[in-house]
Amino acid sequence: MDDQYAHVLALGASCWQCGNPFAFDPQFVPSVFVDPEINFPPDVVAVARQAGRGPGDRVDLWGKVYELPASIEGYDVEAGKRRAVLQPLCDPCIQRANEANQRNGLPAQFTTEEQNRRTRLPRDVFGPGG
Ligand SMILES: [Zn+2]
Image (cartoon, rainbow, N blue to C red; front, side, top):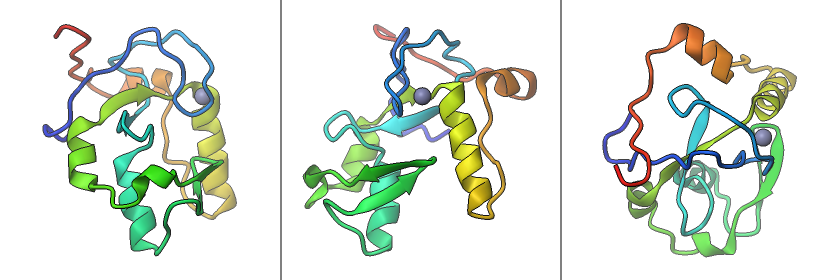
C-alpha cells in the first residue's frame, strides 16, 4: 500500500459504490482510495485521461457506469491521491465487479472481505483520531 495516502477509513460507513450501509472489518474489507473533494478515485481519473476521456464521459468501473465528474476539469491527480481516503466496498459490489470482468474476458480479480481474511495480512488502519 502506498504510504502517500492517508489511511483513513470511516468505520460503520456505507459502501462507496452502491451506498448501502454494511458492517465490516476495516482491516480486511475491500476498499478504494477516494478523493473526498470529487468523491471519485484519483487513479480512475488518471486512467480515464490516458484513454482520452474527460468530464461528462462515461466510464465502466467495477460493473457500474459512472459519469466522470465535472470537477475533474484541471484536476491535479497527485494532489487528489494525497487527499484520498479508503472507502469500503460491499461483497455484492465485489461480485458485480468480478462478473463485469468476466464478461469482458478479464480475470475475476477482486476479493471479498472473507477471502481477504483468509489470505491477507491485516491492513494498517488508522481510524479517525489516529
Ligand atoms: Zn456496494
